[in-house]
Image (cartoon, rainbow, N blue to C red; front, side, top):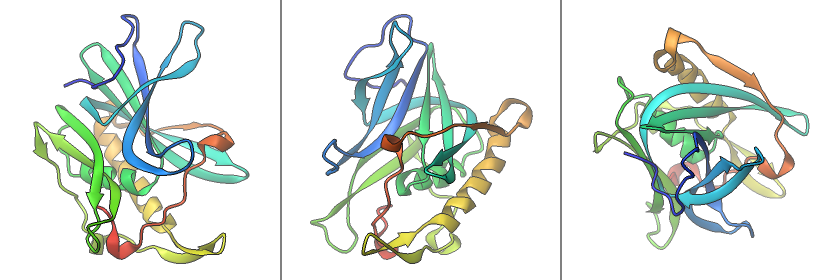
Amino acid sequence: MSLKRENKFDANTKLSVLKLKTKDVDNKPVTPYFEVSEKNTEGKWVVVSQTDYVGGDLTKIEFKEKEFEGDKYTTVNLFFKDGNDAYLMDCRLNMLNRSLFNQLLSLTTFDNLSISTYDQKSKKDDKKVYPAISLRQNDELVHWKYTLNELPKPTAVTFKGKTMNDWTEQENYFINKMTEFSKLVNKGGKVVRTADVVKPETQAEPETAPIDDVPF
């Protein structure tokens, strides 16, 4: 299984970076997709295509400690390999990626994986849709390891005059679980952490979906 793309990779390409996107350049919701970036001949990372599917073997997990305007947070990098293609998925602790982590935590082996993004109808109003993500192994759907009742609940906060959910406790829960999980995936059972500074345009988007209508 390989990464399906709109553009072909150059024969010398060794690594691609995938970033999950749920909004367009005008900040309007779109069907979720992975933005695919590669290094060009000048050594700069450039966006080359987009895809709603990625497949391969999970080979490594890294944690990046980032900072934005004084606020520090953690992102998770998932490394995959499929034949001669290698790529990493840059995962911020948003709702879709927490759902993906919950599925990954069910795994006991890490090969023959595929990840797809799509729109899912709201449980309360089928005219509304939310971005969703699914994990399969050997073409079989992988289910969550932890149910909603087992996960920490968000707290209500006010952001720019709107009431929103604060998912910090659940984010920390998944960071701890993924840290332990990474010891199984990484060679030698090591937890890999690196430091980074995130630019303003890469700041994670706040979440707005209510807890009783989560899209997965």
